[in-house]
Amino acid sequence: MSRIFRAVIMGPPGSGKGTISERIAHTFGLQHLSSGDFLRENIAARTEAGVLAKTYIEKGLLVPDHVMTRLLLPRLEEIARSSWLLDGFPRTLAQAQALNSACDLDVVISLNVPFETLKERLTHRWIHPASGRVYNMIFNPPHVKGLDDITGEPLIQHEDDKPEALVARLRHYKDVAKPVIDFYKSKGVLHTFSDTDTDHIWPHVSSLLGSKIPAPTPSVQPSPPH
Ligand SMILES: Nc1ncnc2c1ncn2[C@@H]1O[C@H](COP(=O)(O)OP(=O)(O)OP(=O)(O)O)[C@@H](O)[C@H]1O
Ligand SMILES: Nc1nc2c(ncn2[C@H]2C[C@H](O)[C@@H](COP(=O)(O)OP(=O)(O)O)O2)c(=O)[nH]1
Image 1 (cartoon, rainbow, N blue to C red):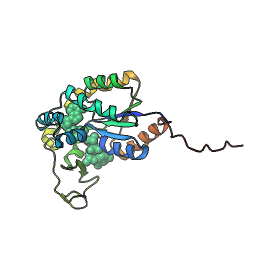
Image 2: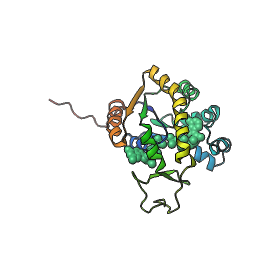
Image 3: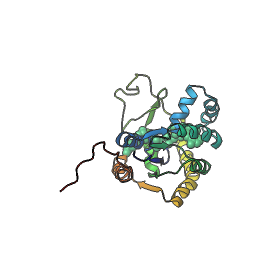
Image 4: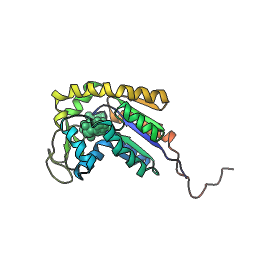
C-alpha cells in the first residue's frame, strides 16, 4: 500500500494557494482541505463552531486558535487514511503546534509573492459567495462579466480585498506567519517558492511533489529489463 502523504500550503492572501492547491489535488490526487471553505460549510450548516466562527469572520478577525483546532483536527482524523493538502491552516504558531501534536507533515509549501503583485491580484478578485468560487477579472474572468459561470448569480468583492483594507491585512499576515515559517524551517520540511506568476511556480511545486509522493504500487509488476 502506498504511504500517506501530508502537506500544507501557506502564503499571504492572493499568493495563489487556492489555485495551486487545485492543481495539486488534480495532479497528485491529494484531498484538498481549505480552512476557509470548511468554515463556510460550517457556517452554512449552522454548526456550533460555524456559528461562533461567523462572529469573528464578519469582523475581519481570525477565528481563535482553539475554535480552529477543534474544528480542523477531527476533520483530519476523518480523512486520516487519505493523503491530504491543507490550505489556510495552520495560520498561527499555536495552530502549527496543535497540528504537530496530531501528525507529522511531509512537506510545507510556502508561496512568496511580491506585495505589489498581491495588491494587483486581490483588487481584481471576485467571488461567488454561495459556492466560494474565485474569479480574477484578468487571470480567470467569468464567461459573462460579473456573473458566476455555473449558477449565473452575481459575483461580489470581499470588503477586505478592497485596496484600503489590503495593506493592513497583508502586514498582519506577515507578523502571524513568520513564527509558523520559522517553526517549519526548523523541522526541515519548508520549501519556499518565490515568483510573481503561478504558472512559473507550479512546475517547481509539481516536480518537488513528484519526487516525494510515492507512486501507487502497480497491481501487475512489469518484468525487469534483460
Ligand atoms: N487557520 C485559520 N485561523 C483563523 N482564522 C481562519 C483560518 N482560516 C480561515 N480563517 C478565517 O476565515 C476567513 C476566510 O478564510 P479564507 O482562507 O477563505 O480567506 P482569506 O483570509 O481571505 O485568505 P486567502 O485570501 O489567503 O484565501 C479568514 O479571513 C479568517 O477569518
Ligand atoms: N494575474 C494573476 N492572477 C493570479 C495568478 N495566480 C492566481 N491568480 C489570481 C486568482 C485569484 O483571483 C487571485 C488569488 O489567487 P488564489 O489562488 O485565490 O490565492 P489565495 O488567496 O488562495 O492564496 O489571484 C497569477 O499567476 N497571475
